[in-house]
Image (tube, rainbow, N blue to C red; front, side, top):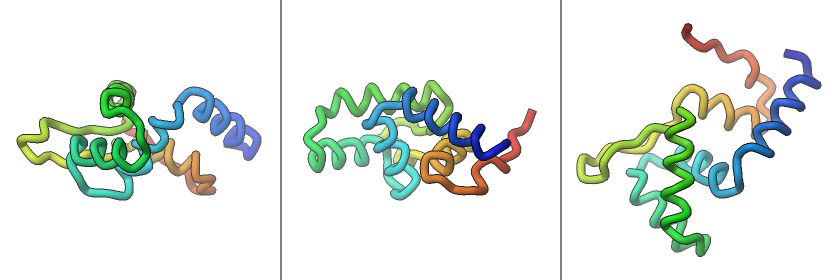
Length: 103
């Protein structure tokens, strides 16, 4: 993909995802925690209602950017391959466009 194509895609993603979704995506990449624990911490630190963060996490899961399971099972939230691609794109990683997706 050309540099201008990457820039266009980055702008599109930035207009599509909101600030809370980008925050959740980046925190899932940084921390190995359950989604509930991560969202509670973000809610306290940022003053964002927990219900808002939960809704945004569900949207990210529906978009196949993250995965997580029931907190009682202790399953950690994780980036999906598409989520990792989007995060690299947002961070300006020059290797972002070299990802290969299985058919």
